Image 1 (cartoon, rainbow, N blue to C red):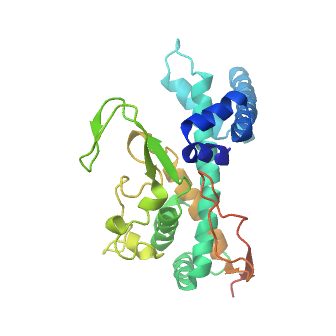
Image 2 (image 1 turned 135 degrees about the horizontal axis):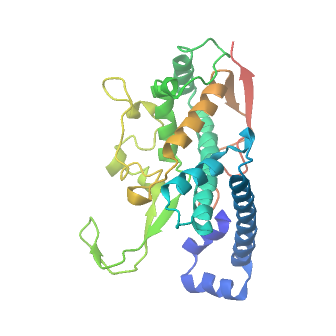
Length: 294
C-alpha cells in the first residue's frame, strides 16, 4: 500500500488516474489492499459494538479500540452515534502511524546506534542508573521521562529518518507561502519531512550527524523543538494524536534491548537505505548480531 501511495507522488496525476480507471499496476494493488483493510476494520468494529451493547467484554477485550469507542460514546449525545467511518479513520491512523512508524523508527535507531557505539554506551549508562545490567523493566512513565539521552536518540532517529517521508497540502483559498510567493487555491505543495530534517538552514552545519545531545538543554532536561521545525509527527491541527504513546512504546522497547544487548551490524549488511515508499523503512531489513551485556 505504501509503495502505491508513493507512486502517486512520482508520476503525473493523469497517469495514475488512468491506471486507476483501468485498474492496472499499483492502482489495482492499492484498491485490493484498501478493500481488504476496510473489511478487516468493519469486522473489528462490528464485533466490538456487539460486545459493548451486551456488556460482556472481558479484561483482555479492554484494548485501545474498546477504550476509544467508550470515550467517544460518553462525549457524544444520546441522539448522536459515532459513524463507522470516523472509527475506521482513527484506527487506520493509529495502526499505520502508531505501529508501522514505531517499528520503522526503532529499526533506524538501532542502525544509528550500531554505527555510533559511543552513543549506544551513553544510553546504556543512563539506563543503568535505574537498574543493574539486564534487569531493567518498565515501571512507570515518570522513569522513562528521566531517560533524557534515550529521548534525544529517538528524536535524532526521527529527524534523520522520519517514518513518513513526505506529505502534500493544498490551501482552500489563495494564500501566501512563508517565502512570500503566492499560491492558488487547491494547489498541491509537497512537504519533504526527510529533506527538512537534513537542512543546514534549519539544524545547523552538523545536520547530517547523529547527535542525541542536540535534544538536551543546558540544564540537562529535554529540549523541545516546535512542531513546524521537528515535523516527524506533522504539525498544527493535523499532528499525530498518538505522539506521546509512540514515544513511550519506543522508549520501553529500546531501553529493554539496549540494557541487555550490544547491537552489531553484520559485515554483509552494507549501508542502510530507505526503499521507494512513503514510509521510510530499511530496505531489506536490518541484519545485526546481538551479544549480551556483561
